[in-house]
Image 1: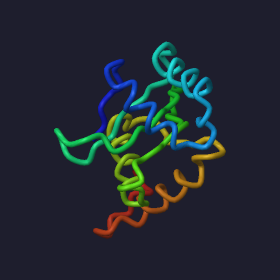
Image 2: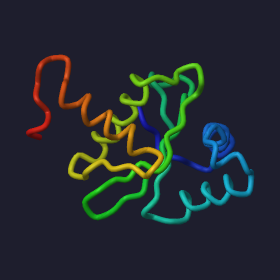
Image 3: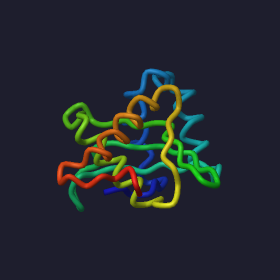
Length: 130
């Protein structure tokens, strides 16, 4: 379940974003957080598996007219797995059903794996026609 970032969540979001190697530097981290809070084409969401539970990660996106680019995806080490990554991305596709999901150089392999996973949905549904 994704929750749109609010300033009340700044420390939580910074904690998750600091797991990303490029954002270890506090100044760079603050710059990225400012981008997500001031630029309407950038959004930051906090992720939790269960409503009312603790946040377990963040996903930062950049929105275009027909795409959503995943810029950052960072999860708590306790829940870091392909299944949790895919759960976050699945929630994102539900929020933006008419946009194509894309990735940066860093997140593109994850987006490609997620696309392949969706095409091979366990219930046998071929999602590639969607």
